[in-house]
Length: 260
Length: 338
Ligand SMILES: Nc1ncnc2c1ncn2[C@@H]1O[C@H](COP(=O)(O)OP(=O)(O)O)[C@@H](O)[C@H]1O
Ligand SMILES: [Mg+2]
Image 1 (cartoon, rainbow over the protein chains, first blue to last red):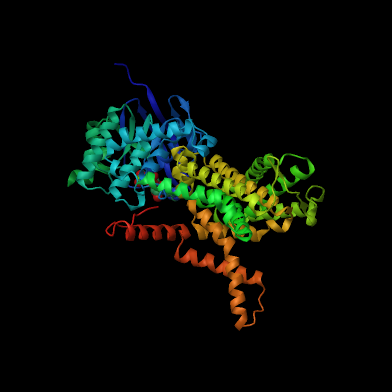
Image 2: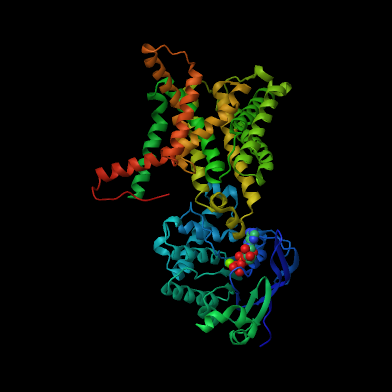
């Protein structure tokens, strides 16, 4: 096997908020079909890093490549069109829409029919809408067990379900890279197990994943490689064995849980 | 069950549509025509404000743009009547988009101010671009011909206004079944998440302005022909506020909201009028009708904002659920929704 092709490459990025250096030279890479985890203590800059990848924040310096293309200066919606999807640490669902509508909008970048067709609900628009619904019900709702909630408004559903809907929405875009920001945070062990299985199924669909997570069992079990950051800087990277053996990592981050 | 309901609803609508002009009095027809025209404007404004979350204070002036466009095309350039209506819509869509551009980066209060400026600027143009608008004197329109029949009076217009209002509601219904409409709602609910999902926020806000203004333009064209007269005072800030009242009272982001709000705002003055008549017998009323009307209006907006932010549409929905439960199955619960 040759070394897999590089999908996402984050090269020495910097980001400041006022005077605070939130990211101070983070680099990481996700290759095709890899599941890469990004870990670090609270406030380390993990969410900020993916906000930079999604162009929600403009970085001060550094570069970001996707499939060899420099995406550093793109707008958020243009990044999405490159097939990078993400879930949100603090749920960002559309409260005025049903579960089905939320997930449908996740596929926005794939919808081709124009505004006129939508106003008339004729031809392409109607056909596409039907196909989209079929795809979501068969491929995505079945994966997450969301079918029975399809016409519920998202605000009325429990937190665990909302988390799933968030991931389902990101997946509806048929991404090449799926970024998950703490997908099991705040979930009980059953829900965590379910989500872990879901993530594994997503992997089987040849979607690369960048995972941010505090649940170390989960991270160590399913990651191909792991990056550790602290105070906005890279501390270590490698396989789970390599990372857990790294003295710096043990000291600043894992120490606590290892001692217990 | 669902199919049946649709069929019954359609049946009632068609019967109303075909028989309306022959069973309703001229005065009732006049109210229906006004309500239908207002429905077009309100459904349009609801797309922008209710569904996309963009507050706009210029709907009155946008309606004016449509009215003037149609009037000028018809009287000065001899464009066929039916053609002037879509052109008025398109023209207003373009103007709406132009005034929408500065609004793209603004929200809430600042957006309201920016669209208020658009309202004032357009009114200034209506008043002062006299070579085109005739200024305060306005433009008179001869009754138009439709397929060889002279389209005069309340009966003649009924089919047109109610027909176009129905189409307007149908298009809006379609829109929110599909991707474009979902993008609008997503911008309203969570614009950052929408953007990261791939929604080009600026583009969709502009589209929302365009569609909403198109509705306003069509409403304006119909209004001008129906009144046979177009002048600046028909499109002032008070009209913009009337439309905001319609969608708040009717139901923000609800298809029926535009219709119910329009009906409410059109017939409310009639009730106020009657009210003044009755009360006036006992207490001498020094207030002018207009002032009293504004007062009732302002009160209604506050009442709805505080007690029923989902508007008449929600009240009617609950009423229907209650009736259904009473009539069909005493056990069935109210459906939770929207
Ligand atoms: N929008 C913001 N404004 C100011 N500071 C921020 C903002 N977002 C994050 N930060 C700060 O940047 C640092 C990194 O935060 P974050 O990326 O959320 O960390 P993590 O996801 O690793 O817990 C923290 O110190 C946080 O307080
Ligand atoms: Mg975080």
